[in-house]
Image (cartoon, rainbow, N blue to C red; front, side, top):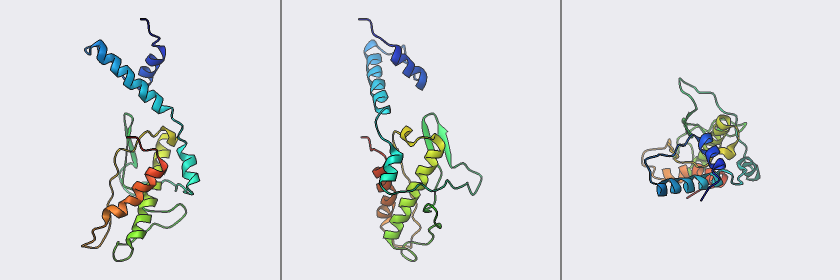
Length: 170
């Protein structure tokens, strides 16, 4: 059976994903199927920036690094972001220690602003947020008093914001 492989070859060239000649014909077929599914997911109808607007969120300006580091680093098709701080668009940096200066609810809101800051940095890095296929990992640090045990609830401010903005793929 002769197959039209032109579209698949364009995909391989665009994403620089070679097939391994050591794999069996079945394995190469599975790889093609997997890659075809990836192509289909790559053309999904997301419109992340429209979703941000619909939710009433505003991306802040991307802050310049305060030290000798980059806010984002790309390795292949993965982007790693440096730590970000909670600063609403057009507002002041949120400062304080949860349990002393801020309530857990205010910490949740601060984490929400960190998520928006992360999205602004991603937009600067890739240009179009619809190019983002998945958020793999989110690490959060909570400045809090000793004995405070609600860190996950605070970090959920960032997780909930990202989940509302970006389609979560299982």
